[in-house]
Length: 392
Ligand SMILES: Cc1cc2nc3c(=O)[nH]c(=O)nc-3n(C[C@H](O)[C@H](O)[C@H](O)COP(=O)(O)OP(=O)(O)OC[C@H]3O[C@@H](n4cnc5c(N)ncnc54)[C@H](O)[C@@H]3O)c2cc1C
Ligand code: HEM
View (spheres, rainbow, N blue to C red):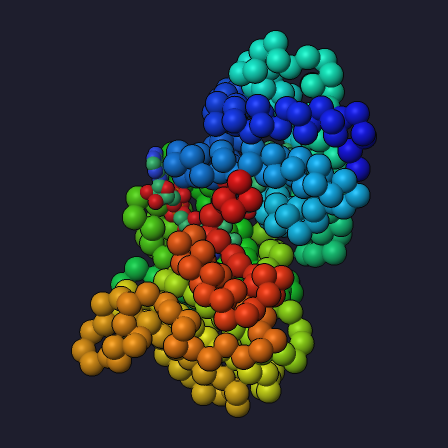
């Protein structure tokens, strides 16, 4: 909890700091990567750095954390911290790196805000930073202890052998991998992701996350869409073949299908159906009697990965329906299923828990439609395939 004195100072300076975040973040990252070039090469996603996405996420999260502390001084916004902590553990952040980030972040704040950063203001924001950092460190330590990530981030990465690879569509490939040492495959929950670390042509070791896309007889299965101009997705498509080895961190991620009896709605667009396929696969394997409504949007039948899996898994479940929308369908296709996902024509049962995954405009639209259909905000869980800019 923030001290009363700091709370007053943070509340008074939040608008100034918030307005300056766009100037603070580039200076922060420039300083950080000038002092530690290895962090950009081997830890941060340099695609996100180049397109600016991650830059907004970190600073936005600190501002959001400060706002939450001011609004509810007695509560820690754990839901927001969980997503970040899972990501941090999955890429191997170490506790001591919080000091490095602190040093360069605060130097950037002083550089931008100058004399406005009085000792009192600096002390108050210092308190916000360490409240958040220490909360993250505690959650991350616990996560490491509870999962196959293990206590030591240095032991996070494990070699896996590709035992099979399938072409799902023209630009989507599935990889099945098993631990190269023959040891057990780590446990996962449907909806979670693995981080994949690859050595690229220029020597950088870049990390990306891929959602598990279903069970695979003891192997881990993940599915990669080739991103236009993307480094790692292209590398995996072009260079990772059956028999090759790839480094993975164990399954992590705070969004996973919760146990229960109530109705479930799984909504996705494009490659966002990887975690949904894992959830549906899990429900089908368990012969779940739950009401399951799958909704998916894609460009057409040929770009739709897991089209056959969706039909087969839905058919296996006693109370499941699937509703597919194509923007430009090939051949005969119902008019009410042509265009973007539109839940007004889908029956959303009372008591539904919804899981969403896709690009931000899709998430915004579907969330809105679910709220209109009467689904409470607390029952809508979403996953974005990039830094969570909703936090910002
Ligand atoms: C939790 C999570 C789960 C995910 N699950 C999946 C999944 O199941 N399947 C899947 O396919 N993906 C998934 N992703 C996305 C995946 O992690 C990668 O982001 C994706 O594969 C793109 O990585 P890349 O290295 O190919 O592209 P990057 O090289 O990271 O590029 C990303 C984008 O930035 C652009 N870019 C790169 N350099 C520049 C530059 N200099 N200037 C401007 N723009 C630039 C690229 O053109 C591209 O559009 C997931 C992401 C997260 C966070
Ligand atoms: C209080 C301090 C910090 C905050 C508020 C913070 C916040 C965030 C946020 C919001 C994300 C995006 C999460 C997501 O969308 O999934 C993120 C990811 C990340 N963070 Fe932090 N972070 C902090 C400290 C650190 C430290 C100390 C490091 C290590 C140098 C670090 C490295 C990373 C990396 C590598 C990613 C993934 C980035 C990517 O793939 O582009 N963070 N962090």
